[in-house]
Image 1 (cartoon, rainbow, N blue to C red):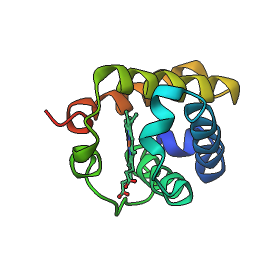
Image 2: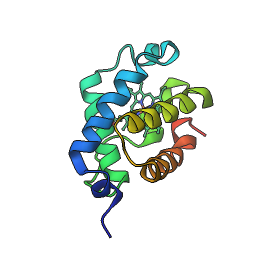
Image 3: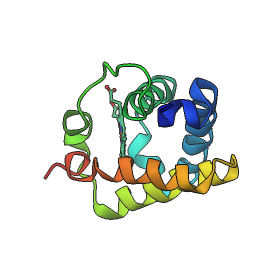
Length: 117
Ligand code: HEM
């Protein structure tokens, strides 16, 4: 069976989701500050690579979720905002709702690592 990565339209679809996701996310004031010193070009690149990987595409060679977020002191509220915004971006781009649910469930599995617990 085709991977989720292929089913949603491969690299082009992931690229579009990640672009829209960060443009929406940075409109949220409580989250935008957290990215104030982040190189967003690199960030988009790493997020695309990570999603490619967890959806069955290419390998990911960035930091672990635990290491990438360790110094940020993130909360469940931050994490919820990220999940909601990712869902909104996919909905806007007309990703089918079953695929959205599967992808958000995969994203959800990183919660404890991202929040350092
Ligand atoms: C589904 C949950 C999440 C995933 C899959 C994810 C993924 C990633 C990835 C792949 C990186 C890059 C790692 C590297 O550079 O090697 C990263 C870094 C980062 N993430 Fe997340 N993240 C998640 C949740 C969050 C949340 C909730 C926040 C804050 C609201 C956040 C803020 C950041 C920041 C600020 C960086 C960059 C740190 C720097 O400047 O080096 N992430 N994340």
